[in-house]
Image 1 (tube, rainbow, N blue to C red):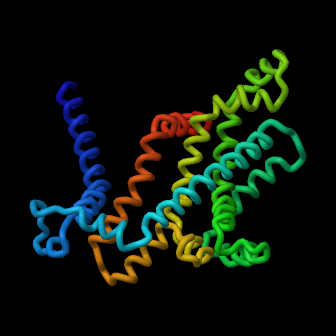
Image 2 (tube, rainbow, N blue to C red):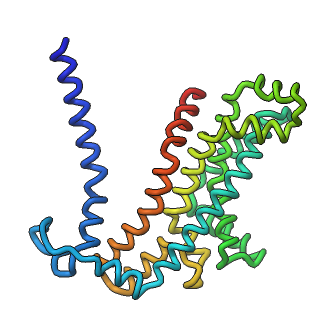
Image 3 (cartoon, helix red, strand yellow):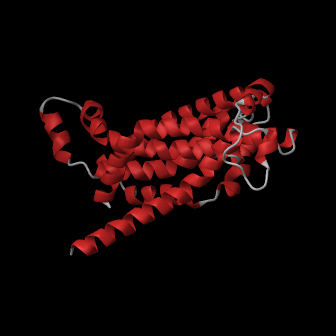
Length: 276
């Protein structure tokens, strides 16, 4: 019995180590390349022990508009997540707490719109934004990102709200609270892990998007990081040190965001699993 338990633990440990190696090696190599000199980056065989430098990061911030791209990405992602969560919370609450004809059909159609690939809707979105003179603006791309992430976030929050017992809200009504007050003081605190888990999904969609940013943003001062990184690639042919230093900087805000919401993210996934 003890030997079987030890073997089981060894298999789990080996599987975890293999998964960590598989996922972490590209990130490790990216960081390593970002702090190597030009002569060491393409050296064969690859060198681990060599002279490291921060010159790539210095060139990135000195010679390119990367800080502008970073600021634009943070602004667009933050505003999209905020708008997305507000609209999805109101919509999900309405779909779970109000009774009206066609409610389930409306919920299913909302998720159905998420099935379309972004490449299929980019032209209609562009034409629609052009009608309102919102192309080449952050407001336009925030609305576009909200439209593509909202169906899934709405569906996720609907599942979270369905898991809350109505008795909690009814107790608030007995104490004199109206529906808005019960939503603010009773439902939303309980749904906070689910809301944060959903916001992670919206953040990842916006942070990594290239297609919408490439089509909807043309002004250099409005570009986000995925577009900025490609421009760096085109303007310097293949400057791997510059590219990898940019990739490291791109990763840091997302990593910080995940570290902050990690606790709530696990709770949110657990809530969804119980509901499912």
